Length: 269
Ligand code: IPD
Ligand code: CA
Ligand code: CA
Image (cartoon, rainbow, N blue to C red; front, side):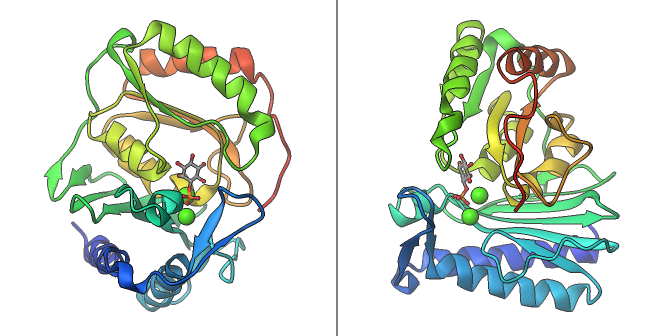
């Protein structure tokens, strides 16, 4: 592991300890919809990561979910941060939320760290060096589509996009083994990288939801794509699909495209 990746891992663990201390959680606000929440801890953790990230790479830029650090200008290194992925789980004390720190190099995913403090699980990857869970190499599973578990969601912050999600889930469910909805996209994508689930689809993810998990999936031998996009955009939400094998990815993409053949929205962050 390079020194940079090990510094990012240490940072994610520090943030994990911060969110486990629930006495620090003092404020919960919504961002316009009842389900889109932000707490004082989302902001505190993002500020902590931003400060340390800029110290690690002084010429880098930061794109983070909680604003204040949105900077998508072209530069060699860009940090893409979700301080708490699974905020609703966090507020409800469900115990399934992660710290997600992605690093892009020249506009493409380069390294990622996702930390689940509730299970002390640290997922990490750097291009070309493999994907790891707590230091042990991970690989996607070899299960075929019919034995696959799908992780998905129904566009909770923009419910107008929910109907095609239900149709896609119904079609995939009919051909696969089972469905999971955990409420933390970055963690669900890492579960795919670790061989625990096989399929992932979400109609509207923001860059910070998937930036860190993206290289973890590719380094674990999986397939992942921001649908209807060129590469991985940092300035807009997008549909995302991922799978453990080329064949399952192709079948999942076919089903998803049958319901959303073109980009269903045109938004910027
Ligand atoms: C959300 C979670 C959720 C996913 C949403 C995300 P947040 O992130 O990852 O599982 O379905 O699309 O926005 O708001 O908890 O950081
Ligand atoms: Ca998120
Ligand atoms: Ca978040």
